[in-house]
Length: 439
Image 1 (cartoon, rainbow, N blue to C red):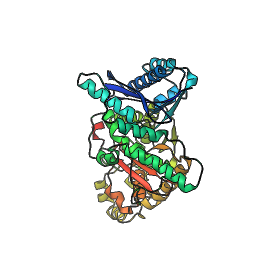
Image 2: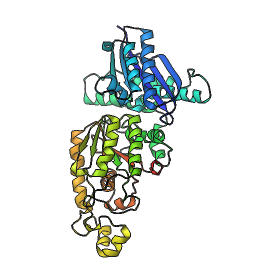
Image 3: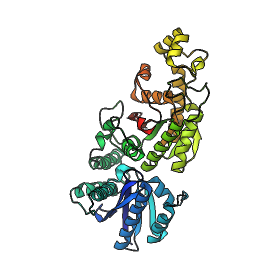
Image 4: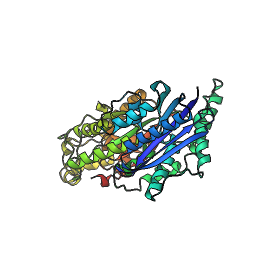
């Protein structure tokens, strides 16, 4: 019985906006490209385009051999989980597309696997070529310019597992596969450095920008290392999302775990929805964990609803208790409690007036929370919805920066950061901070 790999993708520049899909059928033994499909489909959403890509890929595989066993690889968690039967299909636009895809080949002949976007470059390129052609008013036609690159990536993905043997041989085999993927990923190695300088008009543009933050396979040098070492396997990746705005946020008032526990403002609700769309477009988040405070739970629930996930509340992710400073601006604290404020600025051991929590105490709490979550989510990508201080502490610890670094970071509301934790104890930090366009 023939066996094929189908890789499919779709995209929308605007969500909804000008959209297109791409799909490729590969020989799993050699990585050879057997068929390509791509098309500009007009104005549509990301999810519609992704389903269209799936349909085109399955149809291309069926045309090659209707009795083939097909492994579908996609970076859309939504499509993979829905077509696998693990998630319900609720959106009325998705139901007929899923039904159409299911009719192309018998269910027993098709299996689905989620892959990071970095491993879906061939289909992604085809989708972008189709959108570019549509923008020019043309039909997509295959391009030979990157065929060799895609073929090399496909061969790397199709490489059989390394046979059992000496540990050194297995490490070399894993490193070789990873090196092939890295070489096929083009400019991905520099993308993370460019992200923080970009401004984005909408959630789809944000989604494209945050990809390096969310993709654990993107090339990056771990903090404390001096280049690529042995392949440590898939890291545990914590995507750190600061909650959306509350009424206190634009006023820059201290708002910790000992204050009024404010809800999201209208601007904060819009920010949460925009980030939810961006994270859904990437499809990399596997779990959502939130601080117990209302502003985080509301932000987390908005994202989780969009991703079809549930929210787990983690007490250790709460914000610092700012004691008597809760609800005050920095200037008001400086006027009322000048000595206490100066002590707090000078030493991580000092606590805010009135029984607040020091940065040293918060660091112990957050470190213990980090270690507990790492143990529970090894090799997974987890969204932690939390506050300014926990995010800063996690980033500081990952970088090995001194405590005073906490005062040298600024985190916008609804901003994203990410830390990938590797088996050798090193960590890789990626940042995207400016979210002013989401207000």
